[in-house]
Length: 153
Image 1 (cartoon, rainbow, N blue to C red):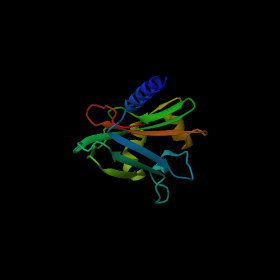
Image 2 (image 1 turned 30 degrees about the horizontal axis):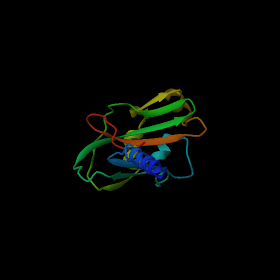
Image 3 (image 1 turned 90 degrees about the vertical axis):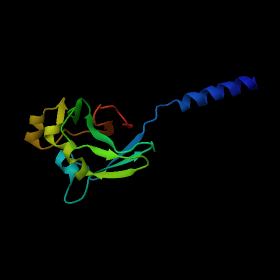
Image 4 (image 1 turned 60 degrees about the vertical axis):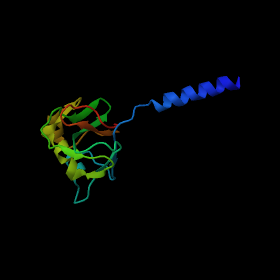
């Protein structure tokens, strides 16, 4: 019985070790007071509203060209970057930790670079704000050329 327990424990540890790991870890932080205006996320009265920490876990990475994919989701509404939007590449290297603020994310949050689903861009332009409710913000790192996901969401 004890032997079976050890074998099951080893199998469980093996499956845990096989969990997907990404070469980059992204941690976005939205600072209060919260806003329903996309322009305020970039900068509100000189203070950043959004910060993102990027940690490159793979030490072999050198000058990798990457881009961000920003997505906002609420019930029935999704706002995200248009695929292959013309943005400047960011270069990252192994072991690097970088903190991005709203100014660094501005090119990704421009209205021309966003596609709206479940809520129209025209409605947003009329009201100047997103619909109320709970929103989920995800940011991921993608390979600039292939679009392959390199980080957690």
